[in-house]
Length: 278
Image 1: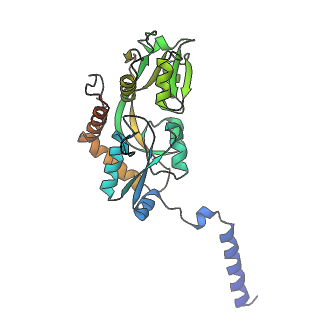
Image 2 (image 1 turned 180 degrees about the vertical axis):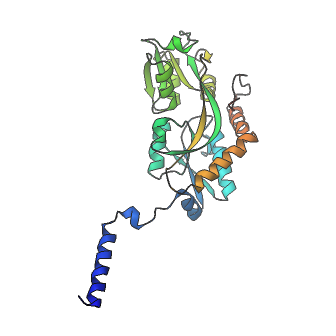
Image 3 (image 1 turned 60 degrees about the vertical axis):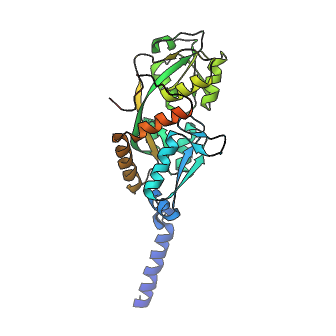
């Protein structure tokens, strides 16, 4: 075979090999960090869950403790903050994987979630509590861990996972959002609900038909994280880790939580409530 023919054969073989490679290998996928820098915006998942996220009735804009954190991140990067409505915590993983958002706040780094997405933080610590129906008087997890006791939770959340761990015998009554959860308890369709202390305080204020606010024993507290896509480029995660550390140490995230509660008419926070691991 002549030199020219050999060159053509090698070129053809190289082209065939390139065409046989997966699309991901031929073209580098744009990372979240690169996407934010290119578009000049950072997208954050939001949904109705006060005091973390709520829509202001007058302006129609999204507000809340986590929204303020998202705005601060955008300000640090000098990009636009874009809230993107998602279907609650149950869609946190899918919205990240689908590229709908760049970050989701207020997530617990559960083992199952860690197989699908990555995390930055933590950004705060929070305790899980229960709120009873006036006719039910549970005080410990053992009181809820009984067949026939109906406990309402939000689907696809850490609330559901914690209930399975702390009261596996309880009958779970699952709803998509926190308002439906609170209504189920106040109307008597459930004996109690369990969620984070802040959301419980808000629901107790909004729903006078609810009963006791309880810190059941043994106490359960977990850190909250920022959910991210799994990717090789770690610049976005590194930035958020340093942002989280800075804002926790200076007390900014605790301040944002308390300020958000005040806008909802909650000035007195129980002494048991803490936003740090200590």
